[in-house]
Length: 171
Image (tube, rainbow, N blue to C red; front, side):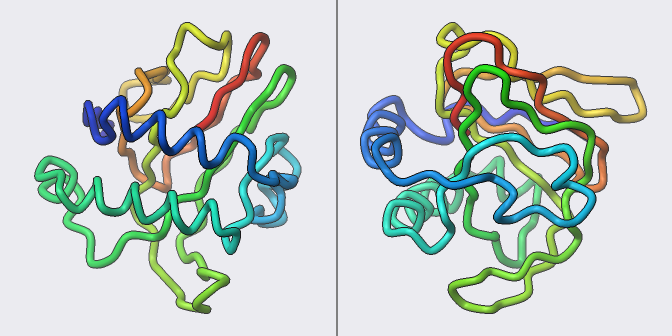
């Protein structure tokens, strides 16, 4: 099941969030990869324990908490703090599934992750490529949403981010 949730973040929230994370120190996205994913992942990521990631993660978690559609669709016991990813030209994340259990480094909590979500933070006209493609029972579904919109999907679905060819995709 794929579900689009429009307007999780308002345009003002997206602008404030991007102003905070864009100048932050980004690291190799493989900082959170498992052995298999590391072979397919070429992107940048904010370190989970960075002040920018923690602050902006709280903004996203607060937005999800006030979104009735998110809660009724996902029924989360808890929500893993978001990972912030950046893809520039040539960056991609090949076929993978998300880990079933994640350990949140700052707290050492183990959190079951059955549902994945991608929150788009870049308007789609600012980059080429970078579609999130999810394989499900109906075939491959490509998703590229406006900034502030979110898509949820089973963490066990094979999915990928197509190579970015122009601009930058932040999610």
